[in-house]
Length: 84
View 1 (cartoon, rainbow, N blue to C red):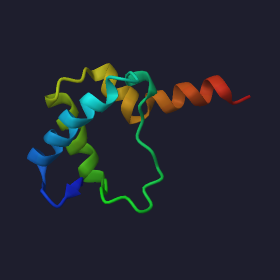
View 2: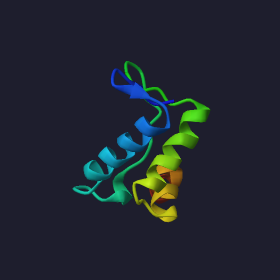
View 3: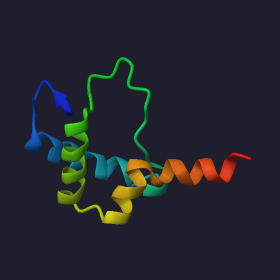
């Protein structure tokens, strides 16, 4: 679950998702993906947190296609385009 000093849980995840919407705008959704390099991160995503993140992205106005891209579609697209 995503957590911070300000709080945690569904409401906090919606706030984070809305915040990320503004971060994604300059680069475009096609350049955004979840990373696996969370060493040292203060935000931790567990299996239940991933569902909450998805819910937060939906509530922040992301489309199903955008969410699918963020949660793995963009990584697959880049790997398919660059690996032999």
